[in-house]
Each structure stands twice: as C-alpha cells, then as structure tokens.
Length: 384
Image (cartoon, rainbow, N blue to C red; front, side, top):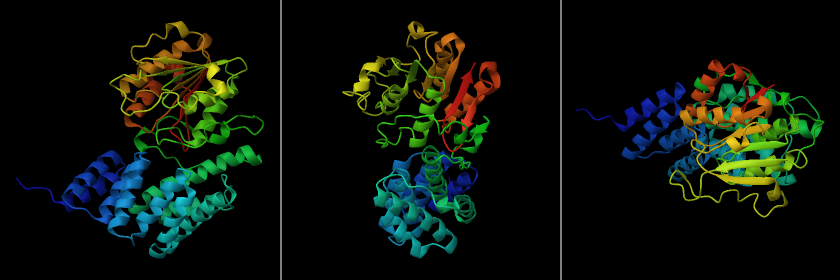
C-alpha cells in the first residue's frame, strides 16, 4: 500500500482550505506536520485554525513557524493580526513591524494600516477609531492576501469591523457593513448589519470588557447582545451556558430595573465539562450578583418548566451539538413570556450549530424571521 507523503498531505490540505473546508484542512496539515515540520506547514495549519475560530491554536502555529524561520513574513503578519484581534496590541506591534520587510507592497499597505491602529490603541490606552478609507483598505486586503495570509484577511477585517461598530456608539455615524467571518456553508440565514441593532440614543453598561478566554463572545457581540436585551426592556433574561459569567454579568447590568437573569451551566462535577473553569467567576462578589440566579444542570435534561412563560430574552450558548441546539431552542420558545421576546444564539459558524439553526429557519414558522448579524457568529429572532 502506497503511503501518502507529507507533500501530498499538504496539497490536500491546501485544496480543502481553498474549498472552505477548514477543519479538514487543519487535519491534513496536522497529519503532514507529524511527518515533517516546516515554517510553511505550521503557518498554513495556523491559518486553518484561525478560520475555525481557534485563535489560541493560530497563535501557537504562527509562533512555531517563526521559530523555524524568523524571516517568515506571512507568519509574522498573521501572528500580529491574531494578537491585535485579542486586544493585545502592544504584543502585535513587534510582529507587524517584523513582517513588513518580507511581504509585497499590497500586503504591506494592509499591515501598515493595522500597525497604525495598534499603535493608536497603545498610545491612547483605549479602542482607536478607524482612519478614513477603511472600505478601500478592506477591498485591497481582500484582493491582495494569499492563502498564507487568509487569517490576516479575516482577523484584520474583523478588528476593523469592531472598531467601526463601537465608533457608532461614540460618534453617532453610520456603520459600514463588515466582512462576514462565518463558514460559507452556514450562511443561509439572512444577514443584517450591526448598525441595524446598535443605536446612538441608547445608553448601555459594559463590564469585563477584556476577553479573558477565546471562547467568550467578542466585544462587538457583547455589545449587540446587550442592545438586543435593552431593545425590549427585558425584565427577565435566561442564559444557557454561564461559563465564566462574562455575558451573564453584562445581561444583569442591562436588564430592566428590578429585573433578573437566570443562567444555566453544567455542575462543577459534571464529566461533560471539557475545560476547567469557575462557573460565573466574573459576576461573583459584584453588586450585580444579587440580580443573578445561578442554575446547574444539562440543558438536555434540565426542567425549565418553572420558568416557562416568564422570560423576555434568551441567549443560547450551551452544548454545541446539532441535537442540543434544536432542543435548547425548543426550550427557549417555551420560556418566552406570552410567546414574545428575543432569542439569540452564539456560534453560528460551528458546523453543528449552523446546521441546526438553518433547519429551524426553514422548518419552524415562528423562527422564519431569524437574522444573522454580519461579522459575528450571532443569530437572533424577534418573536412578536
């Protein structure tokens, strides 16, 4: 039986990547790396990881590539973009500067723009506003970057999108449509720009702005969830998937006066908890803890009936299987007060979640109005 060479595995990975099958591409690259390591292979694996929304793996891969080849400009540029997207602007600057001597002129323009933004963040110690010409910059990035800079394309545009959307809150100006970041095969639900939800005349409170863990929602997603909750003056919110409590504490900060947030997570002793974390750590010992009711259980078997017909806003970010997503949505529909309110889902870019939400969109008349917020993995439905 003829064995598959590392070169052939790499080629299969490139083919899968070009066709949008990023998880498969990552597996091919990883298999090739088990045979032999190279800076190019590590960089391609990292780009696939970035496309699969795994920034920690992407960072590790690009660092491996640079350890093997310190002059690898593509890996340096992408690592800088990954760090910038996580709010680590000071760290990003070093790698963005390093990359500019070994990438072409068009790529240099994109990297220089991101570098300027990072320097502005470090200088002002706050999120910087995008300079003029962002749309033209985005177009240049899309045309210029090759396979190995795909991660820079995705992440740099996402960073620009976040800054522009936050700019709406600060400067009262229209929001350009950001580049989508989800997998193409899941982009079935109609899209809306974030500017359709973000409103200049609505005051919100944001807490725990730093994203301590990669699996926490993005900052712009946090803003959007809070705006959705405030848009209906929700008196009660229910969150499926507490994790470290970052979203929980923000829902509690923006729920209606005397309102309450119920949040459900797996018990600490559950064998299904894939990572170790302290449930609700970010709301513990805060003044908002009194507004939060922590519940424990698997959403598949949890008895939601005491909360039926009493909730205005439901956020689903629990188990990410096809079956769980369907079942959690069924529970959410029963939770809504009088059948009215808003349901929001996270991780539409995940294959299983995407398939479940697409099925609900096509088969459940009550959810025919579902919308996918551009540039995020959020889907929401307003039920009236």
